[in-house]
Length: 157
Image (tube, rainbow, N blue to C red):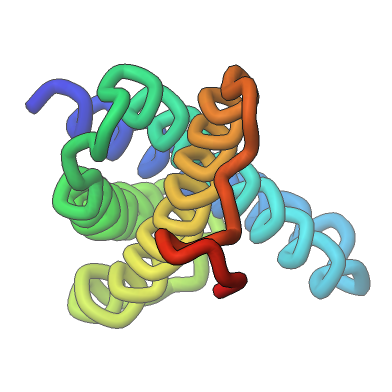
C-alpha cells in the first residue's frame, strides 16, 4: 500500500508545484505562456514515464516470469494524485499572489482531476511496458543460441 501512496503524493505535489510555477511565470511573462505550459507538461510526463519505466524493470527483474500487474497500483496513484492535486490547487488559489486559474472546487475534483489522472496513468503504463521490455531484453542476452525459426518438422515457419 505504501508504494502507491508515495507515488501519488510525489506526483500530486509535482503537479501542484508546476501549476504554481506556471502561475507565477504567467504573471511576469504572459507572452510565453504556450512554451511554459509545454515545458510543464513535458516535465510531468517525463517524471511519470521514468518512474513507470523503473517500476516495469524492477517488476520484471524480480520475477523471472510474469510479474504482478501494476495497472491497479498506477490507477490508484493517478486517482489520488489527480484529486489531491486539484484540492490543494483549489486551496492555494485562495492565498494572495497565487494565480492558479480561479477554478471552482467542482471543476478541480472532476474535470481537472480527470485530466491529471490521464496524464499520470497513460504515460506510466507506457513506461511500465518499456521497462518490462528492457528487462526481458537484458535477461535474454544471456542465451547462447537464438530461438529457432524452424518448426518441429524442420520447415520454416
